[in-house]
Structures are given as structure tokens and as C-alpha cells.
Length: 313
Ligand code: B12
Ligand code: SF4
Ligand code: SF4
Image (cartoon, rainbow, N blue to C red; front, side):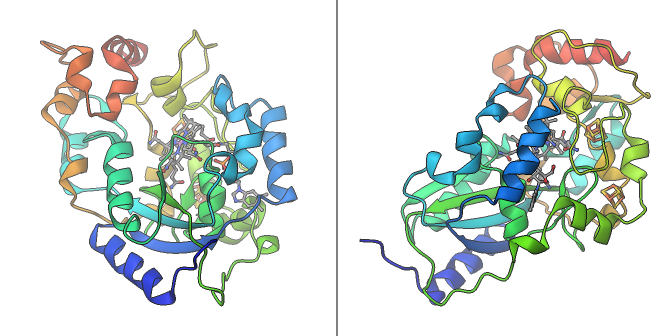
């Protein structure tokens, strides 16, 4: 028998998550993705925009959260802003650039722990950050955490887009009279783009590899983020404007007007480490793959990072 959470418990979750540094906390009842989303997503796949990210083709899991965690009755959605003063200093000081989220500790572990620590007190469940098929931007859009921009990212009208999405799939229902204020018919990337991006094409123009298609989807194979983090095979050459990114890419966010006054969060988990700073200088001395333990850079390994540098120099 499923037990409902109370309004007071939701308030408690929100307060505690805020204390842990989360922003824009929201609750959703379990839902099935809409036909409109399925259509959107299937078109993305038929346009082959997912490149070699084979796991994105698992639509069964993508379309139903219960295929990820069958006991899901409701969802906590929250954003975690990661921009901080030390990372900006490091970006200025070093030869090469690393995406702003990746200078410190691996956010998967850090944020899952932070989320679970709070939510577990109220319901059994599972913390989710990035590495499951959950369509996170769609879920967060339904939770009203931001809008979808031409660059394909979820953007908060006032705080910008330098945040990660974090979820907790709960085994308890929301209060019976809980009202969710988003109507699916009222959201879609096309509508968001029309309302919030309007005629702006800053990200489209600034993207070094022309990866942005202005419909809110990007072509993974062209994206520098994909090429510097995910690529496992030889990729076809793409024309690229000069850039200094050796892991990830923030260009389409840096130029976005919604990031003019981004929200800072001085969380030392996201502060640059000695190792990320050495790598941003192209200094590999004494480093092995093991030195990357606990860092998002581990995903690319030392050889991959060297290759990334060789591609831009
Ligand atoms: C695969 C992946 C990538 C790939 C492909 C990127 C892509 N745009 O699809 C690569 C490696 C290139 C990548 C790069 C980056 N990524 Co990434 N990535 C993912 C991952 C694992 C899956 C994304 C996916 O399924 N894409 C396919 C698209 C079609 O589906 P989607 O994500 O659900 O998004 C679309 C739909 O939801 C639709 N939509 C939304 N609402 C609605 C409503 C209706 C009615 C309809 C019809 C459609 C619709 O619009 C969205 C945009 O196209 C997610 C985590 C996750 N599990 O979701 C993180 C995620 C999207 N990545 C994230 C980040 C931070 C990045 C980078 C900024 C990292 C960096 N600095 O280098 C870059 C940004 C590149 C860019 N401009 O998008 C964050 C985004 C946070 C945010 N503010 O939006 C996520 C959510 C991870 C997280 N937990 O925080 N990523
Ligand atoms: S992350 Fe970089 S390469 Fe990818 S779409 Fe944005 S600007 Fe283009
Ligand atoms: S740069 Fe302009 S077009 Fe691109 S996401 Fe931001 S507001 Fe939209």
C-alpha cells in the first residue's frame, strides 16, 4: 500500500535541499511521457543526432521512468548551480579550457549523495544525476525548472544555465491535493524558443562547429563536448572555429544573454583541483589515469586528454 507524503514533508524536503545548495526545487507525480515528447525524441533519433551514444536509442527506458525504477510514485527535481569564483580565475589563468562543471570533484557522486541524504529521510527511492535514461531536461521542464533554449539546454530565466539537474525517484505519492502547475500542452522547445530566445542567435553563431540546429536539439557528433568527452572512435572531420576547450564546452552558454548575471555557488566540491589545473596547463608530468579518480576528467583518461590537446594545437 502506498503512503502519501504530507505538505509539511514536502516543505521540509525543500528547506533541507536548499540548505544543501540546491535551487528551484519542485515535485512531480509519476508521469508517462507525452505523445508529443515521443514524437520529438523519435525525430531526434531518426535525424541521427545522437551519434554513437547508443544508450540514447533505448526508447523503452527513455519513455517510462518506471523502467528505470519501477517503484517510482513521485519525483523530486532540483537544479544545482556550480559556477564559482575559483573556476573563473582558473579559466583565465590557464592555457586550455575545461568546462565549468568539470574542474572539481565528479558531480555524479557529490550530487547524488547530497540529494539522497535529504530525501531518504522521507521516502525510499533513488537519486538520479545524468547517468540513467531519464529524459532529464523534459522532466525538469515539466517541473518548471527553466525553459529550453536554442542551444538545447534548460535555462532559468533569472539565474542562467550553469546548473546540473538532480532528481530523486520516490516510492511515496505526493499529497492528494497537490497541484502541479504545468500543463504539458503549454510547453515545447518550439514555444520556449519563440517566447524566450526570440530572434537571438548568439549561441548558434558562436558554436565553433555549427552543432546547433535552432530547434533545441544539437548534433552530438559535431559538438565539442561530445568530441572531447564521449568520442570513442575516429570521427569525421568537422570545420571548427578556434577554441581552447580540452574537456567539454561552454561556449553556447557563455554567450547566452540569460547568463549575463549567472548564479554563483561557492561550493568547494566544484573548485579546481591541482590536477585539473595542471591539465589545463598541458602538464601531464607524474599523472596517470588513477590520478583522475574522483574527477569528471576520468571519463576521458590521460591518453584522451592528450589527444584533445593535440586536436586544438
Ligand atoms: C547525451 C547527453 C549529452 C550529449 C548530447 C547532448 C544533447 N543535447 O542531447 C553531449 C555529450 C553532446 C552532451 C553535452 C553537454 N551536456 Co549533456 N547530457 C546528455 C544526457 C545524458 C542525455 C541527453 C539526451 O537524452 N539528449 C537527447 C535529447 C533530444 O533529449 P533531452 O535531453 O530530453 O532534451 C530534449 C527534450 O527534452 C525536449 N523537450 C523538453 N521539454 C519538452 C516538452 C515537450 C512537450 C516536447 C515535445 C519536447 C521537450 O527538448 C530538449 C532539448 O532538445 C543528459 C542527462 C539525461 N539523462 O537526460 C545530459 C545533460 C543534458 N547534459 C548536461 C550538460 C551540463 C551538458 C554540457 C553543458 C556539458 C559541457 N559543459 O560540456 C554540454 C552541452 C551541450 C549542449 N549544448 O547541449 C546537463 C544539462 C543541464 C541544463 N542546464 O540543461 C544534463 C541534463 C545532465 C545533468 N544531469 O545535469 N550531453
Ligand atoms: S557545447 Fe560547444 S560545440 Fe556543443 S553546441 Fe554548445 S557551443 Fe557548440
Ligand atoms: S544564446 Fe540566445 S538563442 Fe541561444 S539559448 Fe541563449 S537566448 Fe536562446
